[in-house]
Length: 272
Image (cartoon, rainbow, N blue to C red):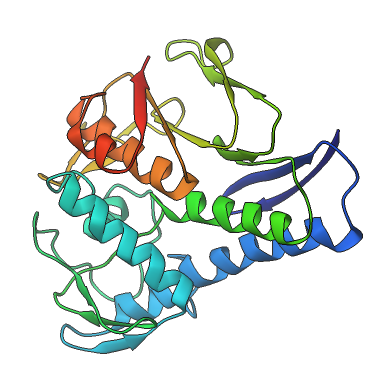
């Protein structure tokens, strides 16, 4: 087993391969992850996301095709989930100190208001005074890009794991352990993956109280803008990691491991 790891996307990303790859294979896979980090960072002032957030309502913004594809998938999940998933939750995350505040005053979060409209690939129109954050989907998309890059370089069996958002390819079954909710150092569930992805969302370490005593978390119910603070863990298995990543937020917000949105994307969930 060959393992390599690098810090990206606010976590440690590990690439594991069953056999020694071509020298450039892992380098190219990490380059794809770095690309997503650069394009979709809320923090970096020159990212696609930052430029979109600085734009005025009505502006057309040129973005990388990868960013466009993530916005397209996010729009599909938002529609299928009845608004549980909403990228425009960024003002809430800034208010709760999970994201750094940009220089400009934060817009108000209005449930149900669409922040963007997709134009031709590589261009998006900002349709409301809103900030968006891709933290609930970009990590999974980066994992997918890394897997695709490995396959293009002849790797036929691999696992890419970005802080618990992971995807595997190949004939082998890869073991996965999901943390226990009450004791995160312990194992709450064990399973195996073969040619699929899994992502997990929970409030193991990120839940906190505001100065007003309000319990908050980095998970936001897009229908209301309220924090999702349930003491549960949600894992979603799906064909792609971007889909699995986004759908964990749907299940966390709805509390429904059988949400119809899952069937739309060929996914399944469990709650522990």
